[in-house]
Image (cartoon, rainbow, N blue to C red; front, top):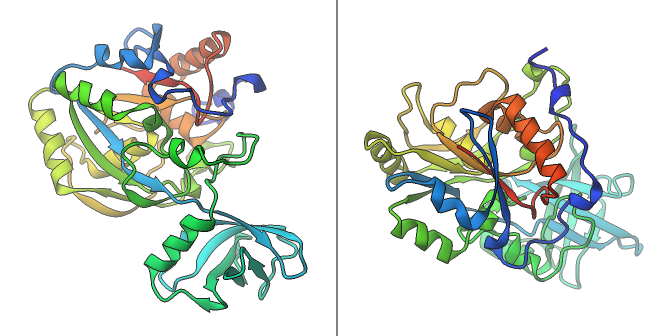
Length: 350
């Protein structure tokens, strides 16, 4: 059944799940998959320029990760944790809460002597609607609240990273393009780039452009439908500026390729492109869900990390590169000891 989730599964030894980033951002390995033949090459990320031509465009996601994991205590002394997912216009946050059975409506969490949170409601999804407080009062400005979150929050490393976030993650779990605050997970394909890497590619004649997709819970939420036709990715906020749309249209008109850095950049670009492959400015939510049969309009090549089995990100990658070739490439990566997931190695599909 072509729309079944089952073929997107694979076996991965725990030892191949990267727990920390490579010593240098650009020191990762890169598995290259050629879509036309299914051939794979074992290369280094530093070789990326060999697969790009002058006039091609690399498109990065410039979202910035919020240190959204807030750990504190209940007034009784018990440990409590809030994972901020999305801020509403009324100043409250939708948040995942631990321990959920204790954090009911009216419950309070204390982060330090001045900062805390109050649970205002339990949502249908099981999340909590919470309001952050300073000295028992709501923050007067969004900016003041943002400063407080930066002070007390921890980087929201994914659950397969089996350790607490530390000071190094503040820098390494952000891309060097991170500008616009709003993500709760990093666009991990961008983690491999350094300013020097980008400058060298520009000197080679590669165009660089940026889009925004604020990575939310929808990106990594498990696929719960066995039939992919029934799966939808929760909306996430994107922006493709007029300048980026114009630049990419110019690249296309000149015969260059659009190379997406990551599945999040891919979804933003595909949302902004029309059926003829022409890019348009866009700002707002996208719930674009790429499943088998989707026709890519915007993206000609994809740089991406290795993804979780049966995840929407793996489905997107396999739809772009071909289910058979991508899953065989994943099995090759396991045999060759590639490092997987957020802090792991990368894969280039050309």
